[in-house]
Amino acid sequence: MEWIDFLKFILIEDIKNLNFYLRIKQKDVYLINNTYLYLNKKS
Image (tube, rainbow, N blue to C red; front, side, top):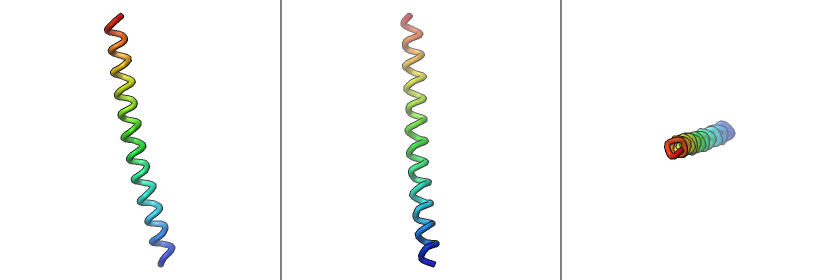
């Protein structure tokens, strides 16, 4: 039973990390797109 709880804990932590990572990636994409548009408008 204990090792199942341990596995669940690891899984939950992994999912949290994945969510965090994906959110950061989305922000990066958003920033990159905005910067790209801004640079294109200027020229």
